[in-house]
Length: 248
Ligand code: 13P
Image (cartoon, rainbow, N blue to C red):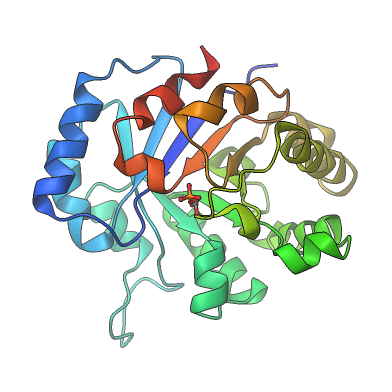
């Protein structure tokens, strides 16, 4: 099995130039496990600045994009623009986009398709709410979310990373247990084997996200179907280095 460990930082709408400069200096000091791939999701307005100071071994992502290259879409940013300023990835389908900005599966799929067509790599986020988990609907929800993306991803699976982020674990300090996370990751892989191909199921990387910290990362990283993390709050802190290094 050769899935490279991949850790994403999702700064969300945080940071200013001073704070960003400090975080990047910290990343440069590392030391970072050379076997881990690192992608940092930054507010679009700082993409070019972050790219200009980030070492080449760390990729930069946008946290959202629109679904066409250009036009009359006030306030939006296209994948072509992200690429133009050095971004290589985009995070799509994050639960905050789904809930706060009311993004539905079909819009997310259109964004994923266009981002991949343009040449960006995509971190595609899925995950159930607390209510859905408590009513036993976790699998139903994540399978629905991933199914909606299949035509958009088509044969571009090598440019996609899935991020399983249970909504109840995001920013709450309430991490999924390694067993809870591993169970969903394994179910996703099983579903992909049946509905896409055994090859995709075996090779696609699935990150876990939701209150990952230096304190819980190693135990989560030891799970066989967890291939990395998408980290919110802790990606703004020095402990992010330990999270990147959690699979060592
Ligand atoms: P936290 O790590 O702050 O819980 O956020 C997770 C997340 O939403 C990453 O995309």
